[in-house]
Length: 288
Image: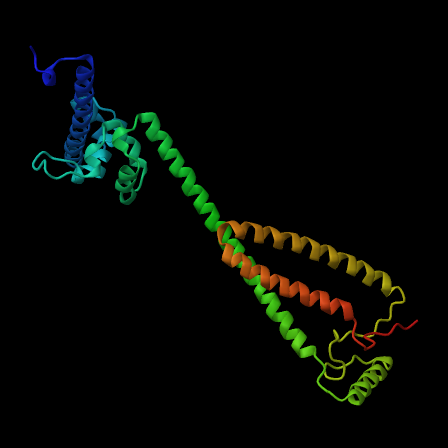
């Protein structure tokens, strides 16, 4: 009676065929790399301009095929098993010829890591192509996110700068005297100067925009239109701000929260300022 361990079954035979097929594919890659090495040697020796002719007449290769084989040698030759020491193995040693060609598109420093993390040895050609496609898409998404992050940071830096300038302007505009009589006296003096046609000074008329005398009787139309335009600009900018914060929330939630608080402070400052604007000081006079 035959030993069950050595019994020939369809399953055993299929396993042997798969093993032979895998070994054959590795032999093909090893042979391709070795041919690439010889082609590179020949290319260095052939006279300039005669490379294509030499390939066609001597080895029946096209230049495209020859360059592909040389590329395989350049990329895989140093790390592929040369048969001198079978105890040493690298991730590259498990590749087939087709897999090696497909992986030429990866940078050398990333190739071995990709081979290990994706179990290339058990992949079909289609599965490997899909894995490479998924990798490219992930890298593109990452690059796009980084670019958007840089744009957001630049925009947020602009907002920070604006907030700082507004704070400085507000600090400069705060009334200096604490005595109510002095405040009243300075306000009256500034009104007198304005009525005389002179522009009020920064110290005599704090917390104003130092407006000049307006001589146009229809100025109210101009300033009403200006108010409408400014409100639209603020609304558009607010939409851009909320969009930036939304995108930033997906990239860096902590930075988003920091910038949201800064924006909120600015909005609160604007809301409080507009409640009391203009200050108790006649900023301009209208002469008919």
